[in-house]
Image 1 (cartoon, rainbow, N blue to C red):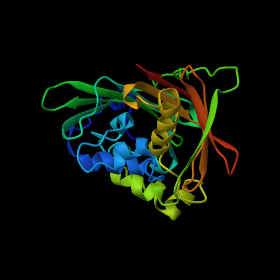
Image 2: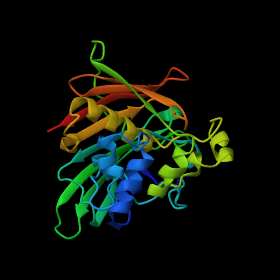
Image 3: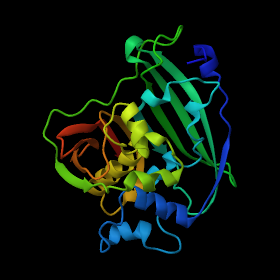
Image 4: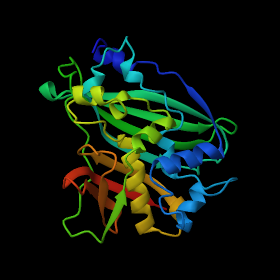
Length: 282
């Protein structure tokens, strides 16, 4: 990475203004797996209404998105070896079906892990342009596996949510579609790791992987349906750790506890995908 620790923390990302419509809300819901059962009345509330569909709260992670900013030449990060490590979201007001939103992203910390790479913590605020109201705050941790050894960077990673010792109260399945990454990228994340087989192989994967934020949306929706099947709009916060890749076409098995804890694995490989998850409702 070309930037020093001090330059990275002061790196200025542009404010993003995004005008959203009901079509955007439906596209997001379809991209995270809703609508596979055309008779599911709950899902149809998000994807089947031509006007005024419900908006999934997890859409906050893609709105006001500054793009794949870590590949900017002046940053010089090794983006081929980049991984999405953690994701969080806190919702303060429902996302409007239509209107203009403002996203402002900033780097909040970098933690050096030496040969394991650099942990980069970022945060985005999402505001309603018309009212100035804070809609959501999202947080992300990226693992820059090729950028360890940054002088003056922090040394202590943030702790993850501790999982319960008891067996889960529910285990539910959610199937991904083989073309799902190609649909999800239409939300604005065009990282070729999710669409170009050659880029995926250069990064050490046999084929393109599913976006971590797509898995985030799918798993969060599954957890919310268990915790409050009739009131998913009351979701207030979600946080999780990505523990492994998900490939389009695989099936998620999601373990859920009544306190909101959750984890998930890819059934076909019996491989952990999500861990240390927590979803909070009002």
